Length: 382
Image 1: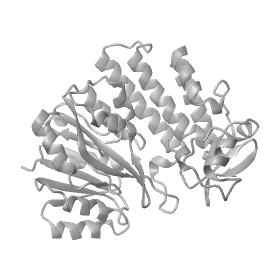
Image 2: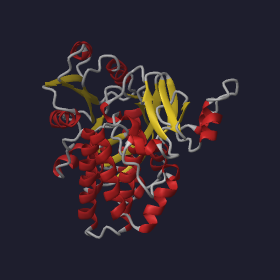
Image 3: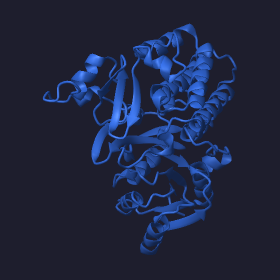
Image 4: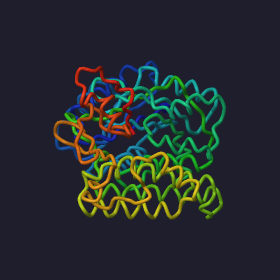
């Protein structure tokens, strides 16, 4: 039996899948298998998978009708035979020592769940390491399951799970298309196993550029809003059960609600200009519902963190937003722009911009000063 099963869901991933599979061939630790689940791809994905399966007996393929990434991962988990499982997206890839680093920490801690590092990339550029993943990966001892920092590290790619632990506790990916990774990860966390860090295990996570096209989870629409609501409700109910309380004023449950509000604001409300009328109405309705459940202290923290949006009165339509001095990201074929004071300023080539004022946008993106050196350190991905 191999020590690791690496599960890769693939849907129309022929352009990126070879890099992911090559990173597995380069692993310094040989004791693993790779289960690639072709989720009904209509491009050349299957041919790529077949080539690697012929090249190396550790690679296996499962084919299914298109059913979504959650179903693909769950089917891969059922087919896995390794003592531990990891989940790698078809457009991400491992460092050559990723699995070896997980093994080292398994030998040291015998943990049920390990947390590694996550390096963000976009095109050929490295965007740096995920800050919260790094903080958790540095922890020398066991990590408490109610550590709030875990709520800010939903991605599953930099995690390693004991397979028997997942099976015994019935941990599966929910059938949602947005934040399903968070629901799966937190179910595993609340199951009560030992959680440890793995600093030397690095996963490279891809943020797609305009030219590469946006993934499903990068689109602001009704389907994703409903999926997010379902996933975060799932996490909230699991947290209530694990904590043994339904009191929403509990500090940890407030953190869950705060995280939901953060995702809604950063990935949906700030993209108001992309949405149709139904998505706008649903987004505002969900935000208002969250605000009603947040304590005064937490609501004040949300408003402080997003003071540019003036959340004392939510903009319900594009026309309403245009009348105010808010900043909203809007996608154009030439890149991302910022709308401020009814004037449009060109933002630099990043997918999101944290700039909170028109002046800052000028400075860091060179909107009005093309000869001035761009200070992209002001711009960060949400």
